[in-house]
Image (cartoon, rainbow, N blue to C red; front, side, top):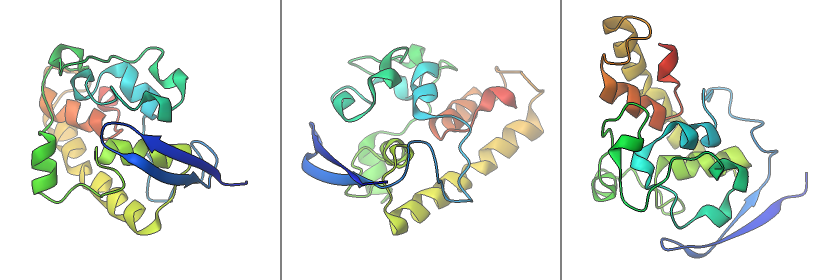
Length: 168
């Protein structure tokens, strides 16, 4: 596969260039097995619909066909109808933001899914993704299968990390 050059110009990045070196949705690290694609996550309702407002040109149009988006954060758009996000300023304070992905994990995942690879950063983000498993297990242990009213914040947070908490 010949690498495809992507140039990003949005509110948070100007002139950022990366290359897609893997086929879309393929050749993931063996420890990284997300249950949802970025398109599925956007259609389910994540991040109060606010996440992808100014960077749609970077990603496939098909991802936005059924996406639940809003100019302002609207918690009602989240699948479980609850707020399960911290503000971006808090993400920065905790050191979770990598300079190449100023919007955080989901931006990393979208780019990874498209085929961008940054080995060291990919391992860091996959480690963070795997750490969410504790929330998956908490829902599984404490909730009846399909009881979406049980631990909705944890279920919504899991959706934000590409775990399909509707299956628990």
